[in-house]
Length: 149
Image 1 (cartoon, rainbow, N blue to C red):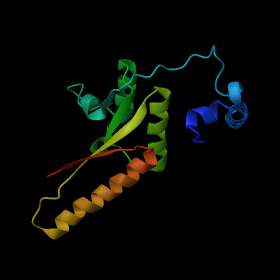
Image 2 (image 1 turned 180 degrees about the vertical axis):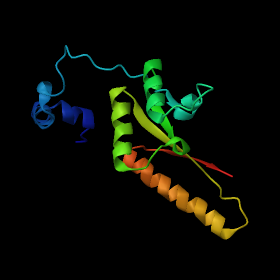
Image 3 (image 1 turned 120 degrees about the horizontal axis):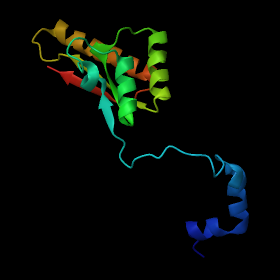
């Protein structure tokens, strides 16, 4: 007799076991708890888009995150050259600011060169990229946009 997955999961003993493992109907927030409605395709914005928003000054990443939240974006990509610091307290502040605005930190944008004929200069670009990967990791950012050349 061939057993199919759907018929197996429909058996009362299996269903009760699965409900027990997942917490059954008691898991998750109560039905009357509002949830943030997610778009099927979340829309992020780069801090670069706001950085020079005003002609007389460059905005901080924190100000860019606030503006992105006010505009209703779902996430923010951080521009590395815009960062005022690389210390852990600064990075944690950026994460907190995004969280308070309901935004994901979804990308980290870097600039370096791999096209120089000088091997030492190319190696500097590689070292910078590795450093930026570490910064993105510390921020919990899953993607890195590399702007070479």
